[in-house]
Image 1 (cartoon, rainbow, N blue to C red):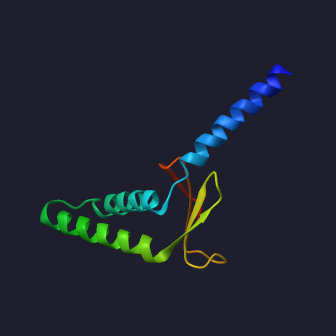
Image 2 (tube, rainbow, N blue to C red; image 1 turned 90 degrees about the horizontal axis):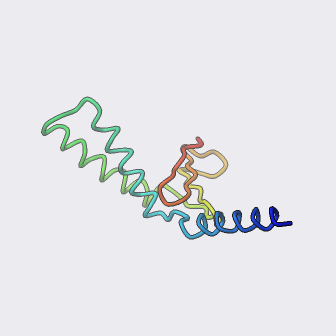
Length: 103
């Protein structure tokens, strides 16, 4: 009986932690911007690198604001680009900092 109570309590704590740290669009926007900036900086340095960084930041911000849709599932969220039936990209986000690309 004690092990069942401990298991239920542990699951409740994990569920509460995931619920209160469910990522928002702003959290996803920060992640996506970092991802795009890192991709734009590969093999580029100097002034060209700075220009590419600025373009990547602006493009990522615009893509998140206009293109992505958030589907809240209480403990985690899906972030989808394009129609839900055939998305171009889909990420699952949890704990405000974990984003996994699923498509």
